[in-house]
Image (tube, rainbow over all chains, first blue to last red; front, side, top):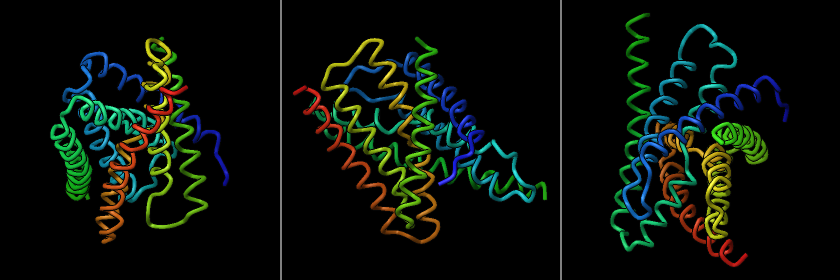
Amino acid sequence: MTVDPRELAAIFLGGCAGALARAGVVEALPLTPGTWPWATLLVNVAGALLLGALITWVHERRAAPPAYLPPLLGTGFCGALTTFSALQLELLQLLDAGRGEVAALFALALTAAGLAGVTLASSLVRRLDGVQA
Amino acid sequence: MLLGVGLLGGLGATARFLLDEFVSAREPSVFPAGIFVVNLSGAFLLGVLTGAAVDGDAGRLLATGLLGGFTTFSTWMLDSHRLHEHGHRSAFWLNLAVSLLAGLLLVWLGRELGGAL
């Protein structure tokens, strides 16, 4: 496995920005354990939309994409803006609070919104690219 | 403080990329094993931090910064979307259901272990 140090630097920088943006949202929408995790929903769906748009745009355009854009914005920013660990802890805290039905609903709503976000963003980018071609 | 959350988030993202590359190179398959390993190990570690009652600034740095930057939702969704698009229906459902259920189990297990530390 070969590693490009400039690619790592792009991921690191994007990751810093993504984590800071997520920390800002968490600060703005503080969570009481056992209640609906709005911050996690917001950052995760936003990141899925952005990543779906970015990757479709990068893969389907005719010209080569700017070299360090996918690691910077995709792996770095979108990857760190979104989170899986906090999601799981928040689901566990909903179960602790005896709100299993809310946990199930949240997991279902979040994954459905995440998948819909990727699909929607990617078809939107395809449509816009088609108009330009 | 904010600077630390950013730096550790960047470090987490870099570690995610390296572990994903490492696992994917060893286990080449349609199943996105790299991100699966990243997300489940991150959920377990967040459980340990929670169980060990690491909170305040240390909690913010390690949980929000490092583990938040390490684990990811967007790539998990993108990979699932691709599995579905390419007709790998069982891998699609497995990637969603097993990640969610095993993640929950591991965050709980981590919290139990962290509490015993």
